Image (cartoon, rainbow, N blue to C red; front, top):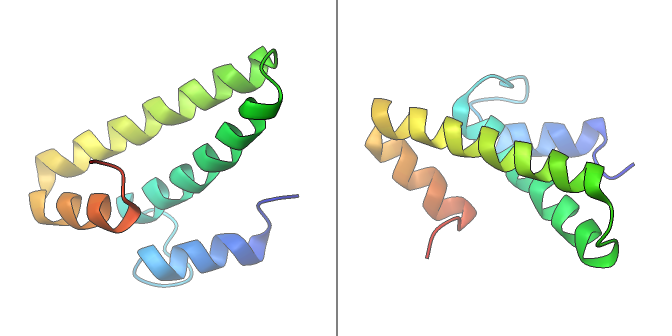
Length: 89
């Protein structure tokens, strides 16, 4: 499995406030970005996998909604996470 508990702990400790901080917007965006990157690689090899394509589209929408929420609440945190993850140009 590509996303085990150890990898989640690593993502949460790096982008969240602690190892158990699974609810902060930054940690959720980082986790979604990791999953999106993995699904994108899968879609490059399996172009006709439409269920994965739908899951990928839904994840991108969830990440976009979280980023919009963060942008409305705290623009500095938004800019920091976008820069750290390299989501924009």
